[in-house]
Amino acid sequence: MQHLSQLLKIDNSNLAWVLRLGLHGLRTQLQEALKTATTDPGSAACQELLRELNTLLEAASQHESLSGETVFSTEENSSWEDVLEPVTSEQKGELKLKQIAEALLSDRELLNYIGDYQFLSTNDADLWNEMQRLLLRVPEKVAHAWQEYILTQASQIGAKEHKLHLSLPFTRNESIYPGLTGEVKATGLCLSDQIDFDPRLMMETNHGEIDLLAGVVSTCLKFIELDSSLHHALKSVDRFGVRSLNDEREKSKYVTALIDRFRRVQTTADHVDPIVALRARLDLDEAIHSLVYLPCGDRYSWWGKLQQEARRTLDSVVEKTRDAGYHVQIRPLWGTYADIFNWSKDDLQIDIGGVRGEVSACLRVYAKINDEVLPGRVLFRSS
Image (cartoon, rainbow, N blue to C red; front, side, top):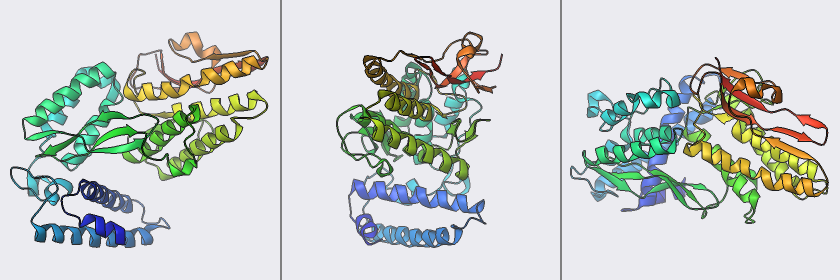
């Protein structure tokens, strides 16, 4: 905790602000989790951790009061507690971004992509991120229009765009959405080629396709922690339904399977038999595409395009397998379910989002290697 305390006490530091934001969020998440995990074997240790977090944050707050400075100034000289602590109507009045959030939910065009969504955030920083993450699963053209609208409306309450981002490891630099400063302080989100992949992948950069897959898997792992709306439909974990990752047991099983499948891709990449590598890539592709929202994210949303970017890497390994003398067919399954069900197996029917009678998500592509058929798997909207 020594280095955490040192960083928190540095005046005028953006990094200290990010750390403080993260610790407040972690504290709130743990407090909420403890309410429903009273019999969890880690509850006692979690309570001790909360006490340490409280001590850290209280000391940082006292230091800030003594220094009389904040990392970002506002017209009203708000303290960090105004920005980071959960806001209640009795203490602080309504959230500054509440009307923007209500306008977002009232757009009937978005209903098919986000369903009957209700925001859970209790402070403006979290609400900003929740709104932006929601837009990552709608068609990019629609999302961009709403992002511009939200920034315009935020500027009218004294908040302005800021380039402070939470970075996700990837093979390129890309802003996903901006942060805010001024009357509302919030981090944005970006992809960065300057930070390491998730350590659980035990991956070093080698400037190949495996790097891209490592970036996608790292991003998936981070989003699981950031976004409580995510579900999984991975057959090897649970073949009978789409399960919320708010369930700690489901989350642990899915995360373990995703990491294991990535590791198999690493270890089989240079296998003498290209079929072994192809099977590993098909399994990883299934794990990545089995991370879904309900309703399913649009294929042409930011989220959908990220998953498609990973799927396109199958092309090179298919070509390598064909060059070795195998007959290989790969087919992503989209369109009317009646037209594709002969190529799939163990499909799941959902009753939300998408177009009735059509595929909402292609979890696994159909593949045929010589005479062996590997069926695909989809989520489809009931007729």
